[in-house]
Amino acid sequence: MRLFNTLSRRVEEFVPINSKEVRLYSCGPTVYDFAHIGNLRYFTNVDLLKRALLLEGYDVKHVMNITDVGHLTSDADTGEDKIERSAEKARMSAWDLAKMYTQYFLEDIKELNIIYPQIICKATDHIKEMIDMIRKLEEKGFTYRIGDGIYYDTSKFPSYGELLGKEREKALSGALPGARVEFNPEKRNINDFALWKFSPKDKKRQMEWDSPWGVGFPGWHIECSAMSTKYLGNHFDIHAGGVDLIFPHHTNEIAQSEAANSEKFVNYWFHVEHLLINNKKMSKSEGNYLTLRDLKNKGFDPIAFRLMIIDHHYRNKLNFTFEKLEKYATTLERFDITLKTIPLLEETNEEDYLEDYALAFNNALKDDLDTHKALQIFSKYIDVLNDYIFKGRIPRNIKQKHFQLISHFNKVLGILDEYAIPEEIKALAEKRYQHKKAGLLEEADKIREEVFNKGYKIIDYSNSYLIIKRRYNELH
Image (cartoon, rainbow, N blue to C red; front, side):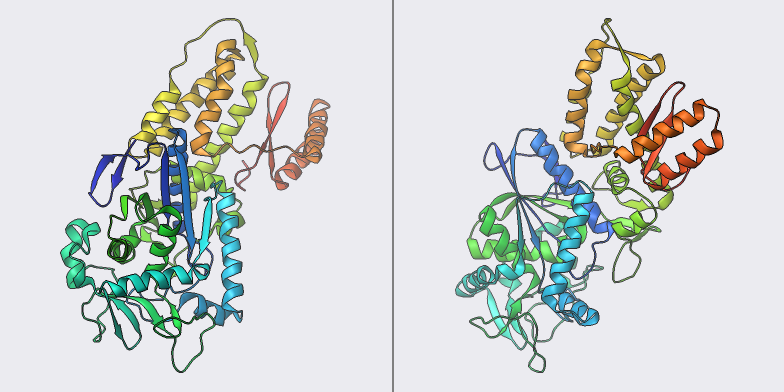
């Protein structure tokens, strides 16, 4: 497998530290609100990467954090804690709010058929590990104290900003657009960042802890360093995130982790591009975002959104529209119809040639996770199946290979979800079929609409019918 490594700015052959095991850390959500679909694009692409690695025969140890404290409204370590601010507006405790939005997030990724990481770790459960790492940095001379907290001195880390490539000099001067790093006159250098923040003197926080430096809470960046190294070791294979985390978050993770542990932190950095809406970055701060619930409320199956993500390379921006989502929902229904029709076809004894679609599919994934090309290969196979459906029969050797091949594709795509048709829907569809045979077309149409409103579609054939799950709300 070859992957683009943000650290080197080139596509590299992927070679894990241990031959058969891949250790993967992906930055998780800050649980102060629902995840928007831009966030979910990133989580889905990490899932696709993990599935592709599993397909290659690797064991993947995947760790993801939940940021439930310490993420301030500014990357400059100023402003309010996002969790505490949201809790105050909701008139809830910060703990209850974080728990609630964590659960919503886990429900979202389940609906997108994302495989849960083996370890999901909350920041608030790892305060000790963060304090221990800060103390190591302090002992090595990388920290200093100012009025609002303990800070990391970036001038002590000569390779600070190497993850930025050509943008490094802009970042070091504070001129990198969109970085949201402001100058605090107490800081020694513009990019120095908080490791531990002191609680305000005039206001008691809901989430605060004792530390060697005083009562307070951890900085955002120290969380991922402490948790990733606890579960994956000081040096591991892949660290994933959205492109907006390259600076300052991942840049700061490298600086503090390598300074604390005196060894390389991560070999491959995997970053996913933005999902746009109206060709602008989707952002909660701008208010131009959608959640998975918004898509569902418009009648779309979350798997249609997964299909949209798969059809775009993770390093390319993707502009979201509902018209585009409808196209993918329609495609998903087409896949459903084809795959549910194949078992009904008559088998013939003739032999037929079938291209090695599995090999082509694997090769696409190994080429920097080219899911767009992999989906094209899958679609080409669907076209082959439709030719057999048109003929009304399928060679026995193809049918025997079919189920194994579909399973192979779906190990990565994760779009061919198995679902059972409820007995109530089956009974309605059969009743409609009998009405049609008897010429009672008006009554048949009413049942068809009833079935549709219950979330299913009936596909008519000359002497039979098929029931599929409805993937979007528009009745055609």
